[in-house]
Length: 324
Image (cartoon, rainbow, N blue to C red; front, side, top):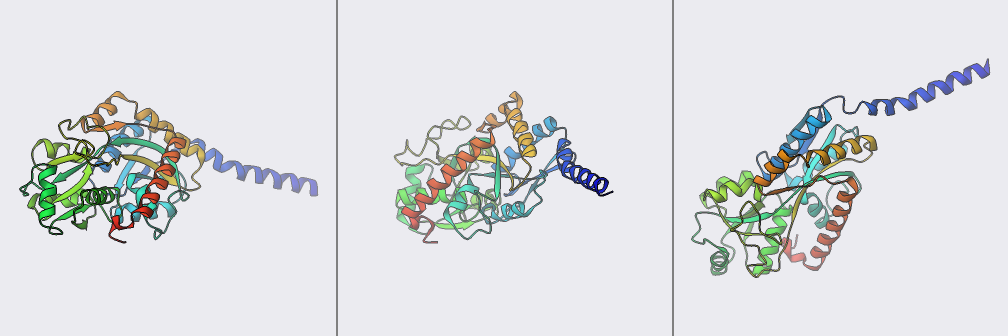
């Protein structure tokens, strides 16, 4: 009798242990939610929707993109860190996630350990744009304007500590000029104030600004990558203008810690395949974005290298964030 009870107990235990693995074999069996921590219509959001549209086809399951802006992306990141680690809750973040975490110890999560890297999706150039209401039409004139009236003009960002905020602060430090920082819930939200002249400058990705630049809605003065952007080839780099300044941007997919490896592998494989699709590559290229689709290990390496870099920069130059 004891032998029979033991056998039944062992069998039940084996079935229970096997259940999650069997369920993962069906992954994904329902829609996947991908959170973009910035407002809809911005560069990060645009690339997320292009990438996930193709990934949905590959996975045979809908990927729902939702936007949750605020605090440089930390609000949405904190929510995803606490979400169920079942493969159905993903974060589509950018350089900002790494930068923001490197420059402050006040976040409720550990960027390098509370999230699992999945895949680098895109790389693109940031561009500095200025308001059409300004008398300045190029970098030289803009810097002269700022030096003539220190602290008079404001610049926008998608949140304090965001990558675009830090890029702007780097420039101000190198140029030896002062501006007032005004954070928004996304760079798209700052556009009305840019057009009216209440905001003089902001750094943003080329994707959301390419058409604005081409149509004369904003004035581009420089890109912050080592080479010019194919989408706006007439705009010089910071280095061409004499500033030792290079800040590349990227976007990537992350998952909460403890998400099953089988789910991570499946999402990463779908991302890699999607980002090699000719139609996806062209759509992204048309807006000045490079299609990537990396392994999880490649994203993890990039994350850690960039985290260490920005942490070192802030330690050496604490004044870049106004002493904050």
